[in-house]
Amino acid sequence: MNSETNKVSDKNDLRFHEINSINDDLLLPWLDLYEKAFPPEEKVLVSLFLSKLKKRADLQSPPNECFLSAIDKEKNLLCISFFSISPKNQVAFLWYLAVQENLRNKGIGSLAYRETISRCQRHDNLKAAIFEVEIPEKAPDLEHKKLSERRIKFYKRHGAKLIGGVDYFQQVGSHQPPVPMYLMIHPFKSFHKDECFSLIKNFFGDSVTQTGNIYLEG
Image (cartoon, rainbow, N blue to C red; front, top):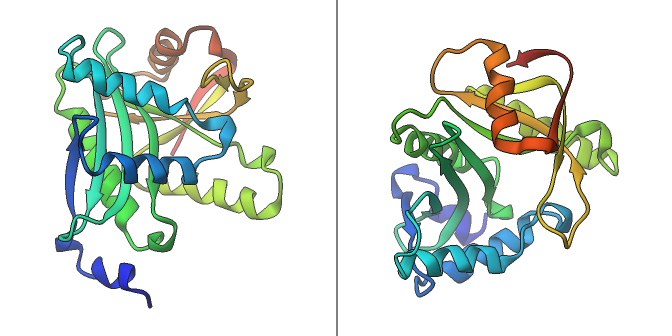
């Protein structure tokens, strides 16, 4: 067992820190984990993150995004998440959630997801958090297929539901082609499944289309 694992053997050592400045010492480790954890076709350009932090420092935009870090008592980065709030569309959008590779399957991701959802729920009038997950059937090999299935099961265990009856293509920017993905939703309030489609359609626009009866699988 390596030293990093020992550092988080007690979950009480874990705490959360929000990055609000490009001068934050945790920003570079945060970006490193982001770069390592996600495939190229699913990553926005790092300049997008930096511009959001710069605008926040210049007071040019409200803080509707959160760069969240899970750290231990020695300030080692364990996990990251990034989410944004869309008051107009009444949803939060979870862009990314990742745990250091050598610390996965130890409960850190669960703590970070619950913290992320809790922070989203602090915003008034939001109905749900929405996010993308990879489609297991489109995985390049059996190992990636199993990982995709595990991620979906993970989110379901924590209260999220897979949205059926829709096609969705993730678009991270002109530097990458659109990628077919599943959409999931974590409801904050009770609503009809048809309202679920309205929520994601209003947010994603032409990236999502209805292909059949909407259903929520959880």
